[in-house]
Length: 409
Image (tube, rainbow, N blue to C red):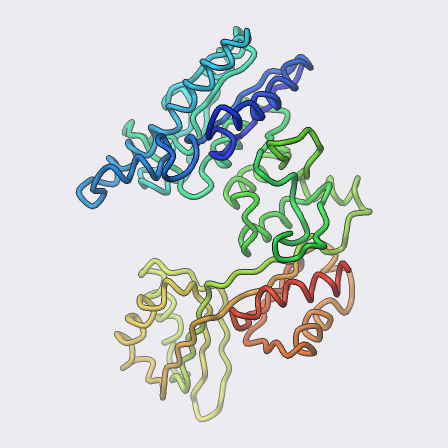
């Protein structure tokens, strides 16, 4: 017998027909003698009656506290657990549910985007002694002061992995409307290839660079605790993609592709400070102030230009432009730039794979593929498994197609 955690999103819980597909996946594993912990999202999307966005639309959220919004947001998942229990029980299965506190997912006190601080699984394990299936609400936990918290974007993925850690599950299955992880978004690159296996580190890079299959926090938690993730389709029985430890990939799956994925995003911006005073630690002070403003700097570059001056360039998320510009304006008397250039409409295309660090010419291939097709590169970031190029946002989709053909065509 295995204990398997299965996570189902709103497209699976939405209505009677979609839930029938969900139940087939649950029942398939129960018929093998396995125990199932099913983590469910709220039913559907706006304006489905019990979807989270629908629930939020019936109140004036600006008149509620963040804690009250979390209480309301969590109701959709609670409804799902009870609907699923009712329907599976009617089919003759032994089913139980857990409450928010019985989930065992403790978080910090940050509402709407809480961080998991600890997990504990004895309530779920005790219920599995008597039941074939335990239904858990996704997307939520509770803080040390006992308040309901929610886990932010992709929170149900994170819930599933956290529960998997807590009960030492054999596998965590993440179900969606795609049957695994592809080398690119098939909607952009029709020739994209489904991967059988991918390492935690590669999946983390894909998630952080625009791929939307798995939430990066759930992958990070799985990697820390050695939890196997199986990303697969809600709508068929086919094997999807396994996310595994890097050492397992290198030992058992050396025949995998050198490149695991090409991904892109279109929400970056570049800020350049020209002629900053290089005789002080003004740049260090700048980064401290930017961090205090709650902004992450994605890429940083500085170059001495002579005469005791340097140019500084930053790549940030475009939503943070105003906050960074405010910081720069407050520090103008210290930085003393001759001018500040703000460039929006920046995108990023990333080539990701374990093959980058062990194969020569990968960087040149990326660079030449883009430049030979009239795509100008504004900045580049490289690591052992990631080459990211910052380009005009309107070129991102074209760049993904070109690079996929160059490396995987």
